Image (cartoon, rainbow, N blue to C red):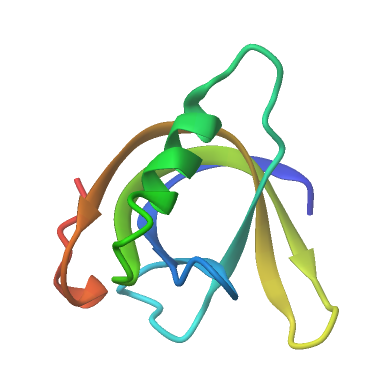
Length: 104
């Protein structure tokens, strides 16, 4: 709980209800990302802009991401992991099924 981590995963967002981090090796587990937007680091804001994209683009957002932050476990509701993002090292949008995405 409260451990700093760096991970490569798939981020999926529907732009309205939720965003989740997923791993093909554990497809039934989700980690909920939250942004803390640390001072002086613009990587999270740039990634947020990429997720939003064009207003006429209604496709589900799927990205390969390399992110770091503070992981915590939540027992609230259905137990799940949460990641407070501190930095987005890289991201690349993918069009199609997230299970087909190669994570570098």
